[in-house]
Image (cartoon, rainbow, N blue to C red; front, side, top):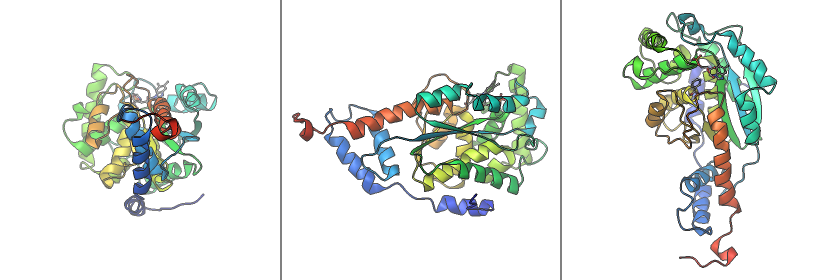
Length: 336
Ligand SMILES: Cc1cc2ncn([C@H]3O[C@H](COP(=O)(O)O)[C@@H](O)[C@H]3O)c2cc1C
Ligand SMILES: O=C(O)c1cccnc1
């Protein structure tokens, strides 16, 4: 398997060198949008989404034929701190469930016409408990970034990344806290359903982790407080940019992983939109920090890529209108 980077410094350089949106294709899409048989702006945000998608695909009249959903799974040493309502073995059990087609994401990917890949990362070797030491060494985080990077199919035309990892809402909260400051309590949520005492415990764990590692930013936040599946999501999102594959982000954990890229290199998420705002308490605040408006708000709080998978249908609808509708001239409809 190809390895395009061996250190975080090399990965950073790839983020810096990432391609920009194709302005010619974006301009063509804007022109076309203005000629379609509807009052200007009548498709609301669908119009912006289609133009954004066209610009990143480098095609003023694109189609979505091959969406790819990838679910990455990892285990977390921080579960030793009692941060989840479920035991750590559920991560591996759910991987089997994904492989057998029994999870929510199996149905949602199918309903959206997407392929689903499941990638488990060293489940037998959880990350270190980040209240004691860095979750990952540089070699470990680079390996996880590379796993995500290599999981993206060059043939796909839309990417959704999701995750499974008991304990990972605590990792995500720690990343949000270290990147954006404030109190740990502002960033923790109930995850799989911890009670009030559990929430207080999660805030303690997050505060200890952020303090121990000196409030790191960017990829260092991902390494010290993240997890293998978060790093793999970040690696896949970065790879998609180079392949001109637009990305729909999922919930709190996916967004926290993505936020480390934005923190490392401003603009690293320009090819990414938010599919859904999760019911996990701080997700909306992280999206605000990133300047991303979610497409949907359905009260979901699952992860697995589930909210983003539902949003694939919205983006497909936007692109179908953009590329399939007649212009005023073609349809012989009088324009205004
Ligand atoms: C059966 C089951 C299926 C899931 N699918 C996603 N998650 C979600 O819950 C976990 C995060 O919550 P916490 O930080 O509280 O452990 C992650 O695995 C996330 O993907 C699940 C959780 C469970 C129990
Ligand atoms: O927003 C998420 O991704 C989320 C929230 C709660 C539990 N698992 C995932």
